[in-house]
Amino acid sequence: MKRIAITSHYFYIEANALRAKLSKTAQDWQYGSLAERVFKHRNLLSKPYAKLDDWVEYVNTPIYQKELDKRRNSVNRQAPLGEKNWAAKVAKKYGLLSTLKARVRPKNEKKL
Image (tube, rainbow, N blue to C red):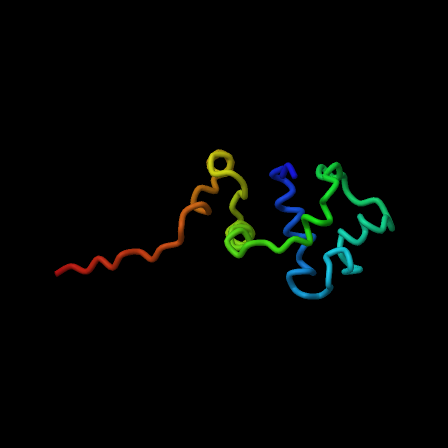
């Protein structure tokens, strides 16, 4: 499947119930947007990924811990999520460069 950058955000949100073990599949969680989308109870926001035929299967596929950590870091640090060049460009444009850098403890500079 061709993965569009924006799908990463939707995937993270729509797979939350599955990751939290609130349901056996993401679409089984009655309060989730995927259930609304699959069972067509109502029309949700415009969906740029609506043409992805295997979206439900994709959302129900387990995510690697490394990828999950990247997404959580993006949310927690409010950093752009995407390819490195794009993330750097967006971070620079909006003054978010510090969100892309690793958190490090300052060196203790004691005078001898």
